Image 1 (tube, helix red, strand yellow):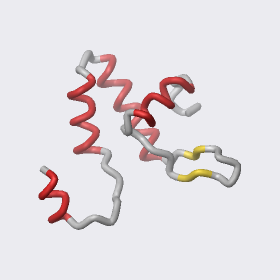
Image 2: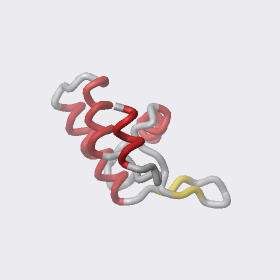
Image 3: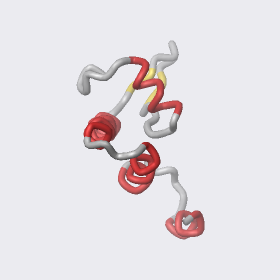
Image 4: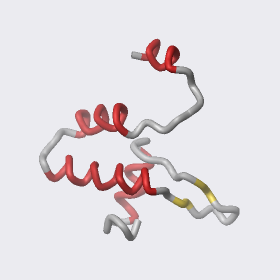
Length: 80
């Protein structure tokens, strides 16, 4: 995550918290991230620096950075 300047530990924490996920995993196990993930990490850093609680940041991620999983809109509505 050279584009964002975050540490490897923070990157792993964001993946563990399921706030981001790699766009691709290479055959050697290296995680690759796309521009959407870089944007999400920058938003996380901005919200964290503004003092938002972790629970609020998680809610904002769910609404703004949800990856397309192939689910229909009706199933997403049922989850709410």
